[in-house]
Amino acid sequence: MSKYKVAVTDYGFPDLHQEEEVLLPMGFEFVTGQCKTPDEVIELTRHADAILIERAPITKEVVDSLQRCKIIVRYGVGVDSVDIQAAKEKQIPVVNVPDYGTGEVADHAMSLLLSSVRKIPQIVSQVRNGVWQTTPCRPIMGLQGKTLGIAGFGNIGKDVARRAQSFGIHTIAYDPYVPENVCNEWNTEKVDWHSFLERSDMISVHLPLSTETKHLFNAEAFERMKSTAYLVNTSRGGVIQTESLVEALKHNKIAGAALDVLEEQPIPMSSPLLQFENCFITSHCAWYSESSLNRLQRHAALEIKRLFNGERPKHIVNGVEV
Image 1 (cartoon, rainbow, N blue to C red):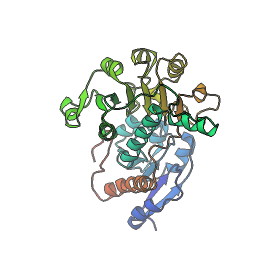
Image 2 (image 1 turned 90 degrees about the horizontal axis):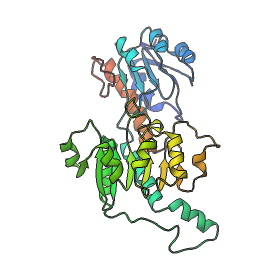
Image 3 (image 1 turned 90 degrees about the vertical axis):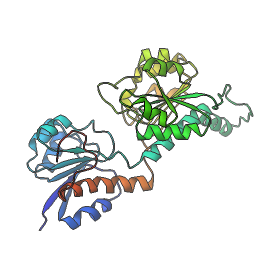
């Protein structure tokens, strides 16, 4: 007979072998679903001792319905689908997994950046259409000596800075919560928001979505950016105001954009962003490699194991003491 129940509200993984390897020996029983609504989540999780979620909504109503839950773990970094305050009031720690795909996201951000600046998708398209030019899609900006602005200087931002510097790129950072000396340790200059926008030849976004960061990149921000600047976002779609980005691209306020995340996902086929040659979009896959996928599942399960072994989970995001 099982001692505990873990509810997996939704997942896109091929299987749950990593989680089972960690939790089955502890006496956990798994119940799984592909919940999309709070009612579906409530039905699945009401009697769960632990919850694993990917994208399912964990609203206040869901939290209030929980009778035995000791921990909620999100597969991934962002926890904007969880009412973390409601969970805190009920003394349920909300935990994320921030360290499973740091290198992958940094690699993807640099890939998008290099592809944008070097205009790789446009050139590939030309070649496929029989156009062979040794100076194609002019002008193409050289990278050495240019300035990359990194919005959000956490672990991924630092990894991007290290990669960019190997290309001879100068790095600056905007992050009100990171001390200047930390930026200096990574050979990166900390700057204010207006300086960040005005000085950057390229911008890579690594910000969480919050009331402070929502639509941070809006019409005013695009007005301050260089018309030759490129924007890359591998963090959260809501950090960029879509309508303002469309207008900026339409009126050549910036040189281009490359996005792995959007306000609406999947992107509607009617989106104007799909019509711009200098804007290309990947499918929220920056985090993915086979090794990061295994780490994500295992690390999420290990947070539950820690709690039920009397240890403190590594990454509690809502301040609950355990």
